[in-house]
View 1 (cartoon, rainbow, N blue to C red):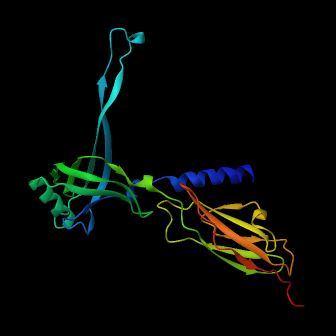
View 2: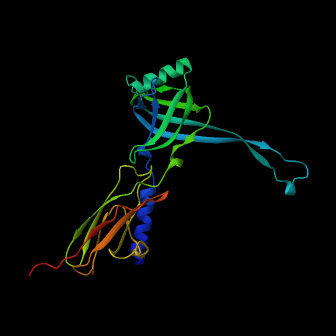
View 3: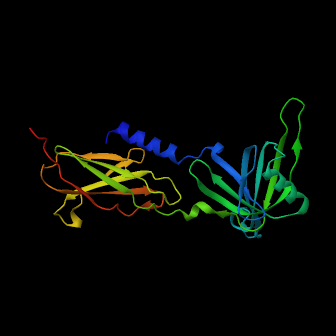
Length: 256
């Protein structure tokens, strides 16, 4: 691997793992608990996580530095955007504000279709601003009661991919198909392996590793008329998937 290729892979990996703010949505469950409503018109979103501190400094503290212990934790969410009063999400917010209802919230990444945070909260601030030269906007503060649950911490490895093989002259072209279940995180790598069909399972080749935006690979310099076995493995932030079902193919020389 050249230095340029390695640098490209590093930068691509960083970009793929970065999260765009526009993709993060705040949603509320309705009173039935069956429908998840994205707050209409939202633009800005801030998730605040704070902790009290307890000072335990004494007169003989080394060097005269104050000392602290961690205290109780709290969280809140600040959200703002264009005010769409007729939307069901804002009707729900109005009811929660007026009646002190608890809201079950969820923060999701709409691009990756994954959940990020969830918890119960109360509406502690809900001002509406109507400037004469711009659209009417809202801002809202949801103060959490109880824990803010990190839903991304439940990421698991993806399911195994599906693999197809197409034989050619001295080569076999492979195509991996991603599973429906990615484990809750983007698949970042795909690994291809090959061996002679007659070899044992401990004789798989070293994996050929590619970024998941390219799910094809061709093994070349193979012996025509000899059967080979192939498999593929996917990787996300939790680790490697199980290997795909083994597929076999026999390279064949073209007819004269």
